[in-house]
Image (cartoon, rainbow, N blue to C red):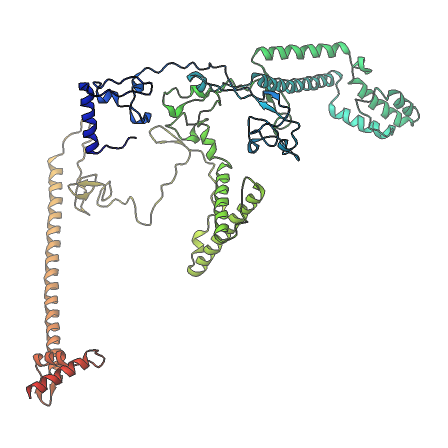
Length: 609
């Protein structure tokens, strides 16, 4: 950014500009030698500060020519090399001899005798491509992807899936053969074990080698006793029944071929339905016999809702990334993560062992810093370099932390007590009740036992003086009262209006009105009597206080008289002024100014003489 010109410099520039406009001196020129019109306004002739032009120019006002850039398919040539040199060249890599990098950047194994010394086995130069990408090329996240490598990985995955499908097909055909011959797999296994014990060929007799050793096994059976012969023949017959005829067994080849065709047809139907194959392969710790899905593509289950359909808002917080197939924010912002089946990919980072890993990382940092502060710079705890040691140290730290906490709690309980308040109820008393209670929408009980209302130690729902509501159930104009009759006088008799029992609700009779008025009159008389008694009681209390005050005054007078009598010396009474002058003039024993006061008093007495 150009510096601010001084006043004198600005005056010189203005004078030069006026002279150029009048034609007295030639105008300024740009970097190409072209004259700059002095009549161009300053706001147009002066370049912006961010262009950092030191000389005068009008380049910023001219149109920048379009630079042709590469398309979306242009990328660096990875691994391409050129021709190798026959001798070492100056400025090349001292290790391998290539001109495209230095020795520090060389990826080849360090040679015992470097190319700069030997001049032999010079490595070929890498092909350096200058790729100038357009806007689309820079923002294309798939630019530079090697499709051949991707196809290779896909083909390898398909080979693994095909192998699993073939094994699954053979397993299903074997199970179907067991069903056809009415033999279970456990029976075949037991027959193999028994036949191995009886024949004793030195190798286990199983389905895979029974056809090869059939003649030898038959000769061994003929040498056995009658009981062992029958047992061995039965075991041999079970093994041959589950082997196809084409392989030397007794199973029907036509039936096995029909089973294979049924399996192929079932596989074709499954592929047409989306490529999923339901099988019983044990994948990733799945229990044996539990159905799992092996798919040729990583597809979602059809019953699930796609991530990008859960929240169609244009807010960037709910953006769905199609490449990584991730949606980090919770698509349901109005609901808690525990209430929905999917709360975003970022929610997983704060669940499970992820929080433990974060705590362990913070512990490693703190422990390393503490060791370095103590001067042990050679010791450190790194979770990435040695995770086992870091986890062991973190576990020991947590155990020591819990032990210190327990010790502190026990010390406090031993000092102040209160351990009985920390005991919880036994499990027998905290078992939930199995009683069933059903209520209507309005809250009334339909069946079952209604839950008992908890009560306090005070009397509740006690209705006195013919009231149907308790005191405090009514509030009006800052006063409590009874809700039934709306009276604000406590312990009064209820005077609520009653109906004659007709549907229309007839008015109160004159007799009832007289009774109500009489009751109110009695209450008023009782209240007046009570107030009168309270007034008499107040007068008595005032007289008692007055008498007590007189007695206190008399005691104070006696004390003062006694004090004055004690303050007399030799029959002469000492006044209050004399005592005050004495206190002011006396010198304390430990007063630091006593010597000064005595010296001042002595000088004063000397002057008087």
